[in-house]
Every structure is written in C-alpha cells, then in structure tokens.
Picture (cartoon, rainbow, N blue to C red):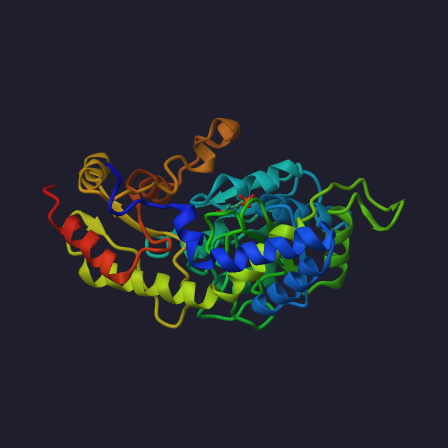
Length: 376
Ligand SMILES: *Cc1c(COP(=O)(O)O)cnc(C)c1O
C-alpha cells in the first residue's frame, strides 16, 4: 500500500519542472560543453545575485563548498591547522567534517530551544585564543544570525563561515557583517548545498561558495580546479571540485521556481502551525521579521517512536533530523563527553513532517488533524 503523505518523493517533487528540465538537459548534451560552460557561468551570477554577494563559485557539493572555504583561508594564512571553529551541536555532520578535514578542531556550541540553531549567548564561554572562526548553520531553513553573533565575531576577529545548505533564499531579521540580510551574504563566506533533497535541489550533487572577498573567491576557484587558475600552472595542491554543466542547467530551471517554492513551504508551515494542537507536540517557532524557508518542519515529541509509528499507520511519512548529533558520532568520540543538553533533547525528540513538493496547505491540515488525534 502506498502512503497517502510520503515524507519525500523526489520524482514527484521534480514533476512540475519535468519538461523544462528535459529541454535544458538536451541543450547541454547537444551543445557539447560539459564543464565550465555558459550554464555554470550564468548559474554563478544568479546565485551571487540571490545571496547579494560579489562572487559565487559553483562546486561539486555542499561539503566541498565548506571544505574549500576553510582550505582557502588556510592558503591565505588566515586559518591554521589546530585552530578551533565554533560549530553548532545541532547540525548535520557535514558542517563539522569540513572543519576536521582541514585539521582544524570543532568547538561545539549548544542550541537555543526556540530557533534550534546555535545559541550565540554561549560563544563567549567557548572563546580561547585558538578559536578563529564560527560557523552558523541556518538549520531547517531558519536564519542563524543575531546582534550578539555579529558583535562577538567583530570583537574577537572571528571569521563567520555560514553553512547555508538548508536556507537558500532565507532572510535574517538582523543584518550580517556586510549589512545585508540574506543568508549566504551574512558572513565572510558561505557554503551552499544543492543536494537533491534541498529546497533548490539538483539531479545529483552540486554546491556553491559565495563571498564578497575577492581573494577568497580567487583562491577557492583555483583550489576547486587542481589549484590552478591558468592552465598547467598550479599555485596550490588543489582538488577537482567542479560543478557539471548539466547540473547547472538543471539548477537554473529550478532556481526560476524557487520563489514560489519558498511561498509554498511557508504556506504549508503556516497550515501546520495553525492546525496542530496537541499537548505532547512542540511546534517550531515562526519568527516575525525573518523569511524562514522551511527546509524541514521539525516538531518535538517526547514519545517519538510511538508517535512516528502512529503517523506511519495513518499514511504519514516522517523523518528525523538528526537522531545522532555530530559530537555523539563514533568519528568524533573524543567529544562525546561534552554537555550539550538542548542539542541532545532536540536529537531525542525531533520529528520532521512532510513539507517537500507536492505537499499542499490542505495536506498539512489533514496531517495536523491526524496528529491531533494521537492518543499519548
Ligand atoms: C546537506 C548539508 C550539507 C552537505 O551538503 P552536500 O551537498 O550533501 O555535501 C552540509 N551542511 C548541512 C547543514 C546540510 O544540510
């Protein structure tokens, strides 16, 4: 039996764009230019415009985008092996992998209960001379930026490296260091993911780096292309982290529809917010003055396993983001003793409800009614 409300079905999510995607793919296939072509170039311009940054470098995926930013700062002498980067406890492990892959150390910061994002009031307590950067992650599509974060970053000279994998198109209620409020343009540099399930998803792996910093942009561009800006002249021991021309073409089609996708997600979130009413369920906050883009709609439920089974039995698919926080993963076992109580509570209670296309506000109201009938 098929589920009435599956958590996610990518073929269905992409169905509205099928004709445009096929036509764009054909043009690339017939054009014969599969890397570093016009689609990639135009896509970079469009993403820089969206994030209100001077530069965009399209790369292979979101993790590579973050790895390349940190690696580039190392090549520029602004970060060094052994330096610490403040990262949220409540995030996807890739945020942290980008730090440790460059031989830097994560300094885990607990979450706020309301935003489920990094709690900037805890930054000061984590400060040490070795802390050189902070990585706000706009988790679930909620911008992670406030005056405390900006003030402390300025005061301590910290680089702000945004993980904007989940929040393209989101708008913060306060300006970042560049004076703009769009996620990706709030800090010194940002990594973006276009993984197929993301709000702007490719049909494969894809990512981007955005920044206003000319030198960082040039260094990332070189590092992503064997360490070379000029053919057969290698400044750095680089990597190959290029974006495929065909993915750029797919993403350009979907980017045209991103504004309506953000509106749809907001309407679904609003329908959940208005209709879910159950003593065991805590809803995610909707913040005034921000544009949240609702990559996930994450409720918190204390009897999670029973609740998810009940929803599954009633045709509603759910997921968990994320059941095991990075500091509890085997690969970060040296951090497992750290006390991150809010992060741990979110990890134990989080349930993501269906919100990807083609879920409608009416579907959300039906799902909410099922939730309200849960016998806790
Ligand atoms: C998806 C994601 C990444 C990694 O992006 P990929 O494109 O899958 O490499 C990094 N951070 C967060 C928060 C993500 O959700």
